[in-house]
Image 1: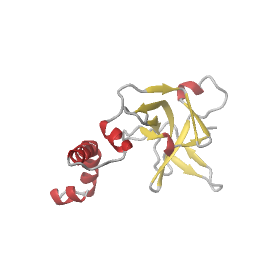
Image 2: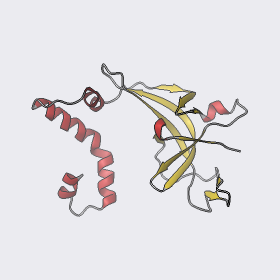
Image 3: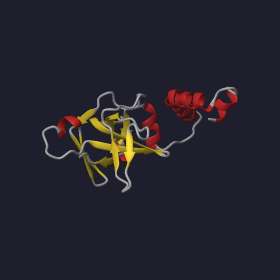
Image 4: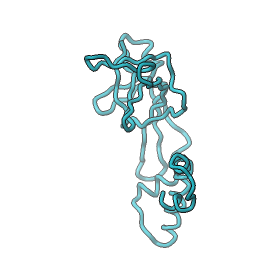
Length: 165
């Protein structure tokens, strides 16, 4: 980030962050490739990660991690309990939503790296409009109000399960 900050002195923090999101994968690939050409060594997982994932992903109706059993919105329609609710914290904000799809991404190589992501719809988290917390600490989410920006994916490891009444 320091290189970009020097190169683009007049860019705002938001512009630099957007640039990092957009260019990081390409920069990392170039960095590792150039290092390997110079004879530097990198861990196997880094070399496999920069090549990128397989273009075919698997979709699952359910996924268990950290004591939670997550299901997709479609799967929960045929069940009596609702466990497609999900929340994820980012800084001081907690985002609430439901899972549309559970995807397993595999990376090419000998290590067999895998990453599970949830494709989610997120609800508006604006206080008193999308989310309310009562005196007992119970959070209510207005599921009709959707979050305006589009960032649907989270890692399964970032998700906590939410009950819906």
